[in-house]
Length: 425
Image (cartoon, rainbow, N blue to C red; front, top):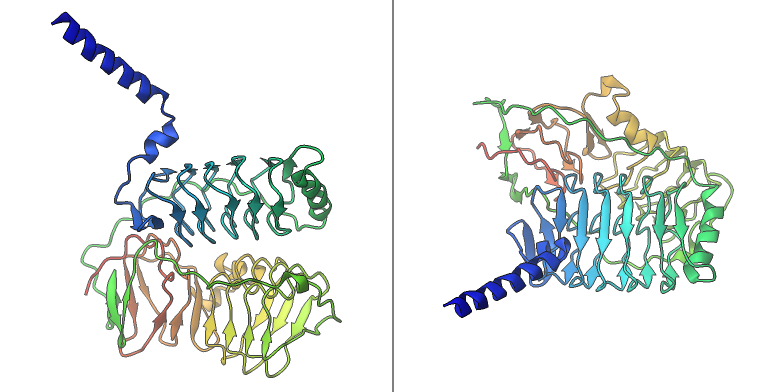
C-alpha cells in the first residue's frame, strides 16, 4: 500500500512541477472560450470583456480586424501557434498597453497595431523578419522598442507618428540602419500628445419602459426599409486587399492646390505625408478619392467638387492641420477613418459649433459623426446613410430610432461596441 501511495504521490509531484513550470501565457492559451469567434483555425472576432487576453492554442491566424477598436483589452499574448496576423487586427485598441508576439510569427503585418495610443511595451521574438506598412504607426506612448538583427524588411511607414520613440538594435544590423533614418524623419514629425488614462465612467442606468417616438427602433437586429441588419459588438469590415504603389508616395509635389487626378480618381497614397499642399480645390470630373490619398499631408483646407461620389478609407487620416472641409451633396459614400485625427472632425466631437447639434451630416445625407450621450438616439430625417464607426463604443445607447419609411444604409461597423442596444420592437 505504501508503494502505491508513494507511486501516486510521485506522479502528483511531477504533475505539480509541470503545472508550475508552464508559463502563464502558454497555460492560459490552452483553453479556448466562447469569447473567441473561430472559422477553422482563424480567429475572426473577440467578444469577451477580459482586459488581459491570451490567444488560444488552436489559433493559427488572427483574422483581419479581429480586435479592431476594442477598448477593453490592455494586454495580449500571442503564443507560438499563431503563424499569421492579418491587417487591421488590433487597429485602434486604445487601451492596449503591452503585447507579446510568439516565435511562430514571421512578420508584424500591415496596419496590425496602428493607432494603439497607449501601447507602451512590445516583445518581439527573433523569428520576426518583416514589419509592415504602418504596423506600429500612431502609438505615441511607445517610447522604446528592441529589434533583432534578424529583421531585414521594415516599411518606411511602420513607425510613423511616433515622434519620441527610440529603436534599440545592434550596430551594423538592418534594424540599426533603419533606426538612424527614422531619427532623421522624426525631426519633421508633428508633435504628439501622449494620452492620459480616461477616468472610470459612471455607469448609466438603463431607461425602464422607455417609450420611443413614432418610428421604428433598431435593436440588435432589425429590418430597415427593405434590408435586414444585424448589429454585433465586434463586427468589423475590411477595406479590401490592395498593394499600394509607394513609388509615387508623396512625390506629386506640384504647385499648391494642383492635384493629379487619374481616371477620375485621386489615387491611393498619392499625397501621403506631402508637405507642400495646404489648400486643395479638386478639379471638376473627380469622382473618387482613394484610400490614404492625402493621409498625413499638411492640408489645411480642401474643397471637393460637385460630382465627387466616393471618399475611401482613411483618405484624409491624420491630416493634423485640416480645419476646413467642403463636401458636396453628390458624395454618396465616405469610408471609415476618412477624417479621423483631423481638427475638422475632432472639433465637432469636442463640441465646437453647438448649433450643429449632435449629428455631423455631410454629402448626400451621410451621417459621419455623433457627439451625443443620450440613451435613446433618434436619427435625423435627412440621414440616408450611417457611415462606419459613427457610434463606436457609445455604450450609453439603449435604442436607436430612425424615421419611418426612410431607407437607411448602415455600415457594418456603425454601432460597433454599442453593447447595451437592446431589441425593443
